[in-house]
Image 1: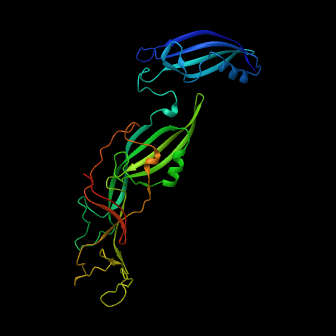
Image 2 (image 1 turned 90 degrees about the horizontal axis):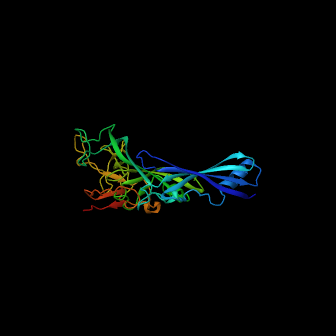
Image 3 (image 1 turned 90 degrees about the vertical axis):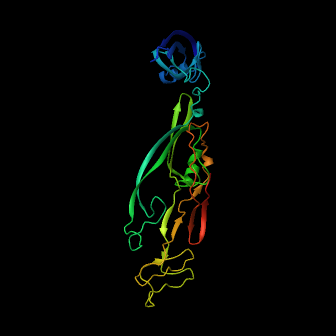
Length: 317
Protein backbone atom coordinates (compact mmCIF):
# COMPACT_ATOMS: atom_id res chain seq x y z
CA UNK A 1 0.00 0.00 0.00
CA UNK A 2 1.33 3.45 -0.87
CA UNK A 3 0.42 7.04 -1.64
CA UNK A 4 -0.04 7.94 -5.31
CA UNK A 5 -0.76 11.66 -5.04
CA UNK A 6 -1.17 14.37 -2.35
CA UNK A 7 -2.72 17.77 -3.07
CA UNK A 8 -3.28 20.65 -0.63
CA UNK A 9 -6.82 22.02 -1.22
CA UNK A 10 -7.89 24.48 1.47
CA UNK A 11 -7.14 26.24 4.77
CA UNK A 12 -9.25 28.23 7.20
CA UNK A 13 -8.93 30.13 10.46
CA UNK A 14 -11.72 30.29 13.03
CA UNK A 15 -12.08 33.12 15.50
CA UNK A 16 -12.10 32.11 19.15
CA UNK A 17 -14.05 33.66 21.98
CA UNK A 18 -11.57 36.56 22.08
CA UNK A 19 -11.70 37.16 18.30
CA UNK A 20 -8.08 36.03 18.07
CA UNK A 21 -8.61 33.28 15.53
CA UNK A 22 -7.13 30.65 17.80
CA UNK A 23 -8.32 27.57 15.88
CA UNK A 24 -8.11 26.47 12.30
CA UNK A 25 -7.98 23.58 9.84
CA UNK A 26 -6.26 22.52 6.62
CA UNK A 27 -7.36 20.00 3.99
CA UNK A 28 -5.69 17.74 1.44
CA UNK A 29 -6.88 15.21 -1.09
CA UNK A 30 -4.92 11.97 -1.17
CA UNK A 31 -4.99 9.10 -3.68
CA UNK A 32 -3.70 5.74 -2.41
CA UNK A 33 -3.25 2.26 -3.82
CA UNK A 34 -5.03 0.51 -0.93
CA UNK A 35 -8.57 -0.59 -1.86
CA UNK A 36 -9.75 -1.30 1.69
CA UNK A 37 -11.40 1.94 2.97
CA UNK A 38 -10.18 1.61 6.56
CA UNK A 39 -6.60 0.81 5.65
CA UNK A 40 -6.65 3.42 2.91
CA UNK A 41 -7.72 6.10 5.40
CA UNK A 42 -4.78 5.27 7.67
CA UNK A 43 -2.37 5.44 4.74
CA UNK A 44 -3.82 8.79 3.63
CA UNK A 45 -3.41 10.31 7.14
CA UNK A 46 0.32 9.55 7.09
CA UNK A 47 0.94 10.82 3.56
CA UNK A 48 3.99 13.08 3.02
CA UNK A 49 3.31 16.74 3.76
CA UNK A 50 0.40 16.09 6.13
CA UNK A 51 1.15 17.12 9.73
CA UNK A 52 1.12 14.76 12.67
CA UNK A 53 -0.53 15.49 15.99
CA UNK A 54 1.54 18.09 17.95
CA UNK A 55 3.16 19.42 14.76
CA UNK A 56 3.07 23.18 14.33
CA UNK A 57 0.91 25.01 11.81
CA UNK A 58 2.99 25.80 8.69
CA UNK A 59 1.86 29.45 8.73
CA UNK A 60 1.26 30.09 12.45
CA UNK A 61 3.78 28.87 15.03
CA UNK A 62 1.34 29.59 17.85
CA UNK A 63 -0.92 26.74 16.71
CA UNK A 64 -0.33 23.02 16.96
CA UNK A 65 -2.09 20.11 15.31
CA UNK A 66 -4.66 18.47 17.58
CA UNK A 67 -6.16 15.84 15.27
CA UNK A 68 -5.86 14.36 11.78
CA UNK A 69 -8.84 12.59 10.18
CA UNK A 70 -9.57 11.11 6.75
CA UNK A 71 -12.87 10.48 4.95
CA UNK A 72 -13.43 8.62 1.72
CA UNK A 73 -14.40 10.66 -1.35
CA UNK A 74 -14.34 7.65 -3.64
CA UNK A 75 -12.45 4.39 -4.21
CA UNK A 76 -8.87 4.93 -2.98
CA UNK A 77 -9.53 8.71 -2.84
CA UNK A 78 -9.62 10.52 0.51
CA UNK A 79 -9.90 13.97 2.01
CA UNK A 80 -7.57 14.49 4.99
CA UNK A 81 -8.34 17.29 7.45
CA UNK A 82 -5.90 18.48 10.12
CA UNK A 83 -7.30 20.54 13.00
CA UNK A 84 -5.14 23.16 14.73
CA UNK A 85 -5.47 25.04 18.00
CA UNK A 86 -3.43 27.84 19.51
CA UNK A 87 -1.01 26.71 22.19
CA UNK A 88 -1.67 27.88 25.71
CA UNK A 89 0.17 31.13 26.14
CA UNK A 90 0.33 31.78 22.40
CA UNK A 91 3.75 30.22 22.03
CA UNK A 92 5.34 32.19 24.89
CA UNK A 93 7.37 30.66 27.72
CA UNK A 94 5.16 28.68 30.10
CA UNK A 95 2.88 27.40 27.35
CA UNK A 96 1.33 23.95 27.53
CA UNK A 97 3.85 21.39 26.20
CA UNK A 98 2.96 19.49 23.06
CA UNK A 99 3.69 16.17 24.74
CA UNK A 100 0.84 15.49 27.22
CA UNK A 101 3.26 13.60 29.46
CA UNK A 102 5.21 16.81 30.04
CA UNK A 103 2.23 18.92 31.14
CA UNK A 104 1.98 20.23 34.67
CA UNK A 105 -0.12 18.23 37.12
CA UNK A 106 -3.50 19.52 38.24
CA UNK A 107 -3.82 20.16 42.00
CA UNK A 108 -7.34 20.21 43.44
CA UNK A 109 -7.78 21.10 47.10
CA UNK A 110 -10.88 20.45 49.19
CA UNK A 111 -11.93 19.65 52.75
CA UNK A 112 -13.19 16.27 53.93
CA UNK A 113 -15.37 15.98 57.05
CA UNK A 114 -15.36 13.03 59.43
CA UNK A 115 -16.68 12.36 62.94
CA UNK A 116 -14.27 10.80 65.43
CA UNK A 117 -14.19 10.25 69.21
CA UNK A 118 -12.00 12.68 71.17
CA UNK A 119 -10.51 12.42 74.65
CA UNK A 120 -8.76 15.78 75.00
CA UNK A 121 -9.90 19.39 74.77
CA UNK A 122 -8.47 22.17 72.59
CA UNK A 123 -5.70 22.80 75.15
CA UNK A 124 -4.63 19.15 75.09
CA UNK A 125 -6.01 18.33 78.54
CA UNK A 126 -7.89 15.02 79.06
CA UNK A 127 -11.68 15.28 78.99
CA UNK A 128 -12.92 13.94 82.36
CA UNK A 129 -16.20 13.89 84.30
CA UNK A 130 -16.55 15.23 87.87
CA UNK A 131 -15.35 11.88 89.23
CA UNK A 132 -12.14 12.29 87.21
CA UNK A 133 -13.13 9.45 84.91
CA UNK A 134 -12.99 9.50 81.07
CA UNK A 135 -16.38 10.04 79.49
CA UNK A 136 -18.11 6.82 78.47
CA UNK A 137 -19.08 6.95 75.67
CA UNK A 138 -16.49 9.54 74.57
CA UNK A 139 -17.40 12.80 72.90
CA UNK A 140 -17.52 12.81 69.12
CA UNK A 141 -16.04 15.74 67.21
CA UNK A 142 -16.26 16.73 63.55
CA UNK A 143 -12.87 16.96 61.83
CA UNK A 144 -12.39 18.93 58.62
CA UNK A 145 -9.19 17.65 57.08
CA UNK A 146 -7.57 19.14 54.02
CA UNK A 147 -7.68 16.85 50.98
CA UNK A 148 -5.62 17.00 47.81
CA UNK A 149 -6.20 15.31 44.46
CA UNK A 150 -3.32 15.34 42.00
CA UNK A 151 -4.07 14.51 38.38
CA UNK A 152 -1.03 14.03 36.17
CA UNK A 153 0.10 12.34 32.97
CA UNK A 154 2.92 9.81 33.17
CA UNK A 155 4.60 7.34 30.85
CA UNK A 156 4.18 4.37 33.19
CA UNK A 157 2.31 3.76 36.41
CA UNK A 158 5.44 3.70 38.57
CA UNK A 159 3.46 5.38 41.34
CA UNK A 160 1.13 2.40 41.49
CA UNK A 161 3.81 0.22 43.05
CA UNK A 162 4.72 2.96 45.50
CA UNK A 163 1.11 3.47 46.54
CA UNK A 164 0.49 -0.26 46.71
CA UNK A 165 3.28 -0.61 49.26
CA UNK A 166 2.54 2.69 50.98
CA UNK A 167 -1.25 2.88 50.72
CA UNK A 168 -2.72 4.61 53.75
CA UNK A 169 0.78 5.54 54.93
CA UNK A 170 1.92 8.83 56.47
CA UNK A 171 4.85 10.93 55.33
CA UNK A 172 8.22 10.21 56.90
CA UNK A 173 9.61 13.61 55.87
CA UNK A 174 8.16 17.10 55.13
CA UNK A 175 5.74 16.97 52.21
CA UNK A 176 4.21 19.94 50.36
CA UNK A 177 4.79 22.19 53.36
CA UNK A 178 3.42 19.76 55.96
CA UNK A 179 5.44 18.29 58.82
CA UNK A 180 6.23 14.56 59.10
CA UNK A 181 3.22 12.37 59.98
CA UNK A 182 0.69 15.06 58.90
CA UNK A 183 0.08 13.79 55.33
CA UNK A 184 -1.55 10.48 54.50
CA UNK A 185 -2.02 8.70 51.19
CA UNK A 186 -5.55 8.04 49.98
CA UNK A 187 -7.08 6.51 46.89
CA UNK A 188 -5.18 5.90 43.66
CA UNK A 189 -6.47 5.45 40.12
CA UNK A 190 -4.97 5.41 36.63
CA UNK A 191 -6.41 5.17 33.13
CA UNK A 192 -4.74 4.69 29.77
CA UNK A 193 -5.20 7.62 27.40
CA UNK A 194 -4.27 7.90 23.74
CA UNK A 195 -3.86 11.42 22.40
CA UNK A 196 -2.92 11.48 18.78
CA UNK A 197 0.02 9.11 18.43
CA UNK A 198 0.97 9.30 22.13
CA UNK A 199 -0.21 6.79 24.72
CA UNK A 200 0.17 7.59 28.41
CA UNK A 201 -1.42 7.05 31.81
CA UNK A 202 -3.48 9.70 33.58
CA UNK A 203 -3.01 9.15 37.31
CA UNK A 204 -5.14 10.47 40.13
CA UNK A 205 -3.39 10.54 43.52
CA UNK A 206 -5.25 11.48 46.68
CA UNK A 207 -3.82 12.73 49.97
CA UNK A 208 -5.29 13.90 53.28
CA UNK A 209 -3.64 16.25 55.76
CA UNK A 210 -4.13 16.71 59.51
CA UNK A 211 -2.15 19.24 61.53
CA UNK A 212 -0.59 17.57 64.53
CA UNK A 213 -0.31 14.21 62.82
CA UNK A 214 -2.38 11.08 62.31
CA UNK A 215 -2.28 9.46 65.73
CA UNK A 216 -4.57 7.50 68.03
CA UNK A 217 -4.72 8.37 71.74
CA UNK A 218 -5.84 5.65 74.14
CA UNK A 219 -6.05 5.47 77.92
CA UNK A 220 -3.13 3.58 79.50
CA UNK A 221 -4.93 0.90 81.53
CA UNK A 222 -4.83 -2.84 82.18
CA UNK A 223 -5.24 -5.71 84.64
CA UNK A 224 -1.52 -6.57 84.79
CA UNK A 225 1.31 -4.17 85.71
CA UNK A 226 4.70 -3.71 84.05
CA UNK A 227 6.20 -6.52 86.21
CA UNK A 228 3.62 -8.99 84.94
CA UNK A 229 1.76 -9.12 88.25
CA UNK A 230 -2.02 -9.27 88.36
CA UNK A 231 -3.44 -6.07 89.84
CA UNK A 232 -5.65 -6.79 92.84
CA UNK A 233 -8.47 -4.82 94.44
CA UNK A 234 -8.75 -3.89 98.12
CA UNK A 235 -9.89 -7.43 98.92
CA UNK A 236 -6.86 -9.04 97.29
CA UNK A 237 -8.76 -10.40 94.30
CA UNK A 238 -7.73 -9.70 90.72
CA UNK A 239 -9.51 -6.67 89.31
CA UNK A 240 -12.36 -7.32 86.91
CA UNK A 241 -12.23 -3.97 85.15
CA UNK A 242 -8.90 -2.61 83.86
CA UNK A 243 -7.33 0.08 86.04
CA UNK A 244 -5.29 3.13 85.12
CA UNK A 245 -1.54 2.68 84.73
CA UNK A 246 1.13 5.33 85.10
CA UNK A 247 4.02 5.95 82.70
CA UNK A 248 6.06 3.17 84.39
CA UNK A 249 3.24 0.65 83.96
CA UNK A 250 2.27 0.58 87.66
CA UNK A 251 -1.32 0.76 88.84
CA UNK A 252 -2.40 4.24 89.91
CA UNK A 253 -3.78 3.96 93.47
CA UNK A 254 -7.25 5.11 94.50
CA UNK A 255 -8.34 7.02 97.61
CA UNK A 256 -11.00 5.94 100.08
CA UNK A 257 -13.67 7.34 97.75
CA UNK A 258 -12.55 5.09 94.94
CA UNK A 259 -11.05 7.98 92.97
CA UNK A 260 -7.64 7.83 91.35
CA UNK A 261 -5.03 9.86 93.17
CA UNK A 262 -3.50 11.20 89.95
CA UNK A 263 -4.61 11.89 86.44
CA UNK A 264 -4.63 9.29 83.68
CA UNK A 265 -1.73 8.49 81.38
CA UNK A 266 -2.51 8.59 77.69
CA UNK A 267 -0.68 6.73 74.96
CA UNK A 268 -0.27 8.37 71.58
CA UNK A 269 -0.05 5.27 69.41
CA UNK A 270 1.65 5.02 66.04
CA UNK A 271 -0.70 2.79 64.07
CA UNK A 272 -0.10 3.92 60.50
CA UNK A 273 3.01 2.86 58.52
CA UNK A 274 5.44 5.48 57.27
CA UNK A 275 6.53 5.97 53.66
CA UNK A 276 8.97 8.18 51.78
CA UNK A 277 6.67 10.52 49.87
CA UNK A 278 9.54 11.98 47.84
CA UNK A 279 9.33 8.81 45.73
CA UNK A 280 6.08 10.08 44.22
CA UNK A 281 7.85 13.02 42.57
CA UNK A 282 5.72 15.93 43.81
CA UNK A 283 7.09 19.20 45.14
CA UNK A 284 5.73 22.57 46.16
CA UNK A 285 7.69 24.39 43.46
CA UNK A 286 7.52 23.78 39.74
CA UNK A 287 4.83 21.12 39.94
CA UNK A 288 1.63 23.17 40.07
CA UNK A 289 1.26 22.95 43.82
CA UNK A 290 0.65 26.12 45.81
CA UNK A 291 3.36 26.56 48.41
CA UNK A 292 1.91 25.95 51.85
CA UNK A 293 3.66 27.42 54.86
CA UNK A 294 4.50 24.80 57.46
CA UNK A 295 2.81 25.40 60.79
CA UNK A 296 5.22 25.16 63.76
CA UNK A 297 4.57 22.33 66.18
CA UNK A 298 3.54 23.54 69.61
CA UNK A 299 5.22 20.71 71.48
CA UNK A 300 7.09 17.48 71.07
CA UNK A 301 4.74 14.85 69.69
CA UNK A 302 5.53 11.21 70.40
CA UNK A 303 3.95 8.00 69.21
CA UNK A 304 4.61 5.16 71.60
CA UNK A 305 3.33 1.82 72.80
CA UNK A 306 4.10 0.84 76.34
CA UNK A 307 7.42 2.54 77.11
CA UNK A 308 8.81 2.25 73.58
CA UNK A 309 8.79 5.39 71.45
CA UNK A 310 8.16 4.41 67.85
CA UNK A 311 8.39 7.86 66.28
CA UNK A 312 8.63 11.47 67.36
CA UNK A 313 8.65 14.94 65.86
CA UNK A 314 10.27 17.86 67.64
CA UNK A 315 8.92 21.40 67.72
CA UNK A 316 10.10 23.61 64.86
CA UNK A 317 10.45 27.39 64.79
